[in-house]
Image (tube, rainbow, N blue to C red; front, side, top):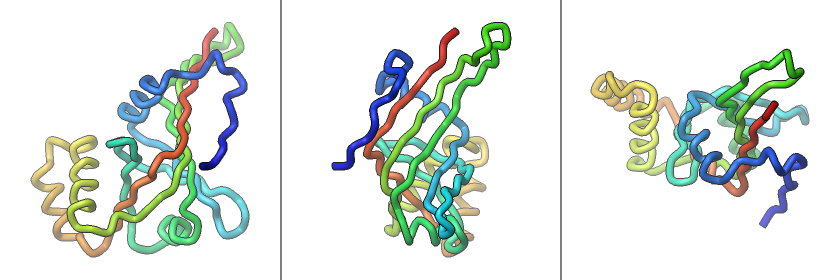
Length: 158
């Protein structure tokens, strides 16, 4: 198993439960992949945290898809709070970072579960229309799961 660094400011580390809460509540996150030119590429994504995984979708082609196929190791970050406190020269923040391996969900049932979970999180009021859209565009998208190998949550204090 891969070794991960310990957090330098251990007193600011969140419990696993609070870290999971952030992943459940965050509306967006950034997926970091290894790009062809040696630079990391961060991509903002809509996602769902479910069953210890980050679920997301995307097109069947393009840079994100190609980079995942080439190197599936990734990191993912959410920031759920960032209250700037100039009087203390700091910010009160909460963030979570996860590391893991991205895999494409290829079976129809898994893909359907992924899209329905995303619809439930972001658009529950138009679930019927969202399912129709999913069915109509079935061949034009892929679903992915980031299987988490390590995660940390951190908070800032005054």
